[in-house]
Length: 554
Ligand code: PEP
Ligand code: MG
Image (cartoon, rainbow, N blue to C red; front, top):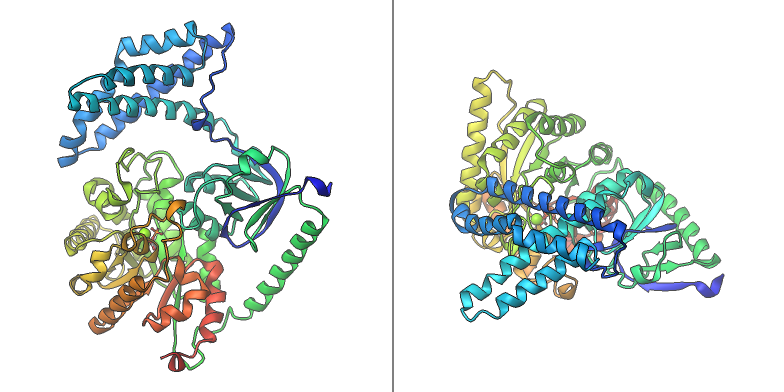
């Protein structure tokens, strides 16, 4: 029925179309259901509340165990206060009483009790005591989140196969899990094309549309929907023309793949003969196999955190070694660059490593900061990488470096891992090069000092753009300010390229712009000769390089 056709605009995260049936995954946390419950729901709702309380207590205890040093002093007291509330019989009794007496579900009961407590705090004269109301809000928020984590886990991912998910937002961990279970695409009402979920969707070549604000209110379970890239939009109840466009697109993709396929064996060289090294960003075995087939120089960025994000708890040394070893073997002698753990900010994890409630996570304990704060966890990762280096050339790349001291600390830990493994009788490979990501402006500005310590550098333009322009890469409201073409970014890239060349050290760009053929000429003109991107972009970038005349451009 053509008349039912509705078009909703969004932003494309991954270049592809998808046609299929919608499956709604509701953003349950935001809907407080105040509908009265019947007497038979009282006991199950009370049990849900008690389970969420137990989960929140366990989370707090785990968080406390992870704290050390100055963080312990700062946060320990707050966590103790939170834990006390979760044990407080008056609070627990009041919520139970609301479920049974006011006949509402666990979420509504918690919300009502929170509102009452907050009102009491608001009335206190002393500003310090009044501000402690925030603790109440946070700790009850934790219990509410635990209620819904339980609900989310009840979705059987196997039931999502062959469907297009429509939801509010998606974490990289859920996206990877759903992809493994064969979903066709994802539409989110929030989010932004530079989020880690969007990057992952591109790497997985999974169609994804974000910022499609009305999707959850307009689409129903089982509706046929079409994700389209040009223009980026969602078509609800697509008509015959839409379906014909989808089929034409599929045929075009096959033709393009054939055409680009001819470039698989070609060198990457500009029209006037400058060689450019193309590396891949990879985290899955398929990416790595593909990288080798595409003639990539190597893996320029292996985001090891994906190993940590897809599971609860931490992977041990052997599990990490097996994953890293598989990558090294698959590259058959070409280097693999393992970026050490970059958890934190929007890469929230289920391992419990990152702090759950940092006020400003992008500026907080992420990347190398977290690794150095948790040396016992980091040492295991370094040992696993050093063991994998016995199987082929390996480089280590450190994320979020803000000063040279951090890189020196990593070098010392890497050396200790090599020493320990050697004395334990492990066979070791060649010397491992240690590089720094340049993604914090201070690293780019003080690049000479960093180059004195680093064997190579790789410019992470995703984060460098966000920190340089003070525009959160995940915040739709400032998406217009997040501009990788900004002259300030060009200035820093050129500065780093010139300094690295002067110091005789390799420099690459590994952010998303490296895989965008629109930026290929720009980056080459700034002096960049190494680019690392997801494998699906490599042939298009090779083609873009071959069309550039660098002499003419200069
Ligand atoms: C970057 O910041 O550009 C980068 C490559 O790292 P990530 O996107 O994983 O933060
Ligand atoms: Mg980064």
